[in-house]
Length: 385
Image (cartoon, rainbow, N blue to C red; front, side):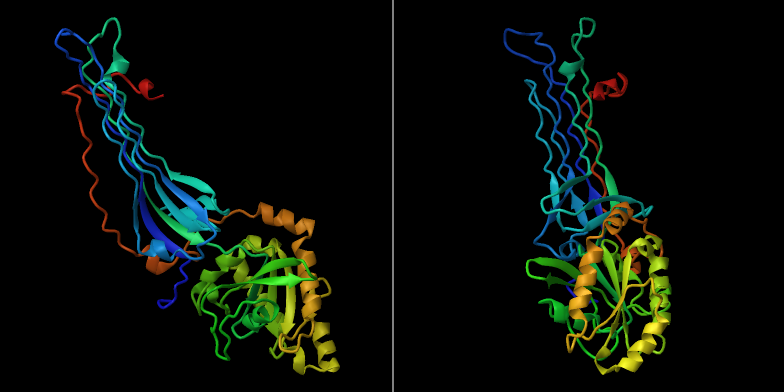
């Protein structure tokens, strides 16, 4: 994966801007010796905002930009001049990006649409100038509020591809061959295990004007939840899929055993995946005769939708597209997908090299105090509301 430009998991440090301090200035002019307080408010600190972009397909830019810092607000000035607001930091991410708290693993938010903006961290509010605190009994307040501090958080961004159908199978089950046969995608195809090292997307045409998106992920093997093979890292890309297409080659020793093994690995990753529509495709069927096909048919449960296909000869491809289209548009399946929640990150869903990444965090700047020795909090918190 070191040579690949496809990055779907990254850990970064974000910090919003701190608010500018209010001014405690007192107005002075030649013929106005007691002009009174005229200190302005401090500027708001910058927000950290995520924005979805359909032009991005990977988190690669963020892999080399580990620190995301928004601008700080400036202090208020005389004549009730407000300080400048800090610059917001807008981070563009691919559609389908999910954000988690790196410390707790809890789900924070997601970005699914192009142009969608999510305020990840709120900038600190600017402090109020001293003219806010004048009163008949306190006509010359010599204090002002400091700005609110910045908010700092380490987050994990996880990219989940947006597709309708997800291909699940052991290495060399024919997933990439099928994707290349039914779409314009051209994934790498070879006869050795783990040829596919990163997810691929393809748009599959169906009966003229209709189409759906199919996602091919690297193959998984028994024990993937314990780190064997490529592990379960890429299964995040099928969590959003409406239908899961399990692919088992016809020359497998036990087709149903492989199917149940794949289901078991998916269940360890996210038990809610079991509620999606499952379809079994027996691939590489161009060498089967009628007798072998009937023998395999008897081993498959009646309640499991299945189809015999061959991406080389085109056998069963049209039937497979029809089955997938019906499953994608099934109302019960749409309801299940709406109810699926994002699971928190745990040891099975984290990427070890990212979690062990060491941040060389810069020291926060000291808050500027222009209060002339007066405690800014002596008048209480009600002034912030």
